[in-house]
Amino acid sequence: MAANKPDAKLLTLIFFVMLSIGLGVTTYMFHREFTSATKAADQAKAENQKSLASLKNALNDIEVLKSLAGHKFETVEDPANPANPATVAGAMRDDLAKLGGPLAQPTYTTTLMRLRDELDTTIAARDKIQATQDKEHKDLLALQKQYQDRTDKHDDAKTKAEGDLRGQIAKTAESISAKEKEINRLRNDFNQIQLELEQEKDLHTKDLKQKNDEIKRMSVLNARLSEELDTVKKVSFEVPDGTIRMIDGNARLVYLDIGSRDFLRERTTFSVYDKSGTGVGRGPEDIKGKIEVTRIIKSDLAEAKIIDEDLYRPIGPGDLIYTPLWSPGRTERFAFVGVIDLDGDGKSDRDLLREVLAQSGAKIDTEVDDNGDRTGNRISEATKYLVIGEIPEAGAAALEEERKRFEAVAEQLKDLRNEAREHGVRILPLNEFLGQIGYKTKRRLFIPGQERPYNLRAGAASSTVGGPVKAQEAAGQVSGVINKRKAKLKPPVSSGQTSKLFGQ
Image (cartoon, rainbow, N blue to C red; front, side, top):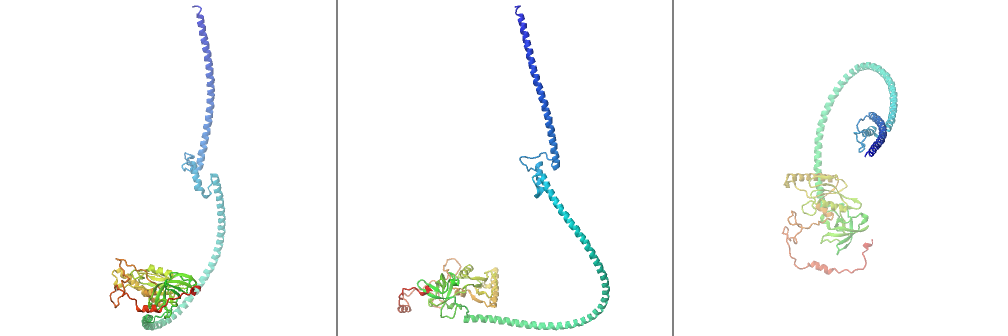
């Protein structure tokens, strides 16, 4: 047991020695690390102070730039919105755009340089203008001196002239007094002459009124006699537009001696007159048929269909054709007034009239509509006819507005008649005009319930004057006249040759 005690002390000593060594090593290591950390902290602190100083300098520089720019916003630039005017950069860009105008550049420096160049140019122009103004002012002062010298001379001359004028006025006053006495004498003579002239003028006015009244009465009498003469003699100065060359009775076609060289149009209608008659365009009793051009064959040949024919006066070769709507190479013009009823249904057919005129190339020169409103030009020598439709009587009007329209139409008719007589324009009623142009109404349909007359008769006409119109039964026999004609007529024999008319 005594031998083990030294061992325990030795172990204890070894433990403490080892512990001391470990603590020493640990202390050394901690000291070295602390020293290194302290040194790094001192370096970091120095770097931080240096960065703070740089940051402070940068902030100071930014504040200086803000002061120079005149914008002290907190935010220098908004990356999301570079044009934000609440930032320094956005406000500066806005200044460049607004203040720089067309001279604005991307930067302040280049913009100021452009503005300075423009300012220098403006200052130079201003200095040049100022120099010009100074020279002009100097010249103006020189001119003012010259004018002042002249004014002084004129004032002197004026003073002298005023003295002479006063002397002349005194002499003139005496002369005026003598002249006034002479004027008074002449005025009395003038008044006497004027009184005599007024008396003579009154006599002349009364005589002129009597003459004008006599002329007016003679004009009315002359117009009435002219109308009566035209009604009785049916004098016409119209010439035929062409003749009928040949007739195809089966197809009810005729062939005319006019064509494309005459500027003939298809659908133009003509009235047909007997070749041995007294002329064309006289009255409806001379018209023996109506035709409508269906085809222009060549320069001097056209085809037309027969749209109406007098059975007792059939159309034959050599018959004359005429329409006032068409003339070779010339546009015919007309004047219309009154109700234009083309088919006898009691309604106005102005649109249909315009269509009929347009087919032949004719035009309306002046027109009075159903309300009494006039359109177009005045009647002149170029107007072919004044055509008068039905003129309603104002006394037959049921309403006041309708009566005013009828009176307006009648007043316009009076003016148109005077214009037509003044220029020698022929006046025709609508039915004669429609006969001359070869127009045939195409409306034959009767619709129950419509307020318009039925223009188709239910059978033959009455054999007595004023007798009722009713259906009549045929006797079942052919007239002997027709049988005699058929006996005399022999069927023609074909020669096998085409008519020479088609070869021309």
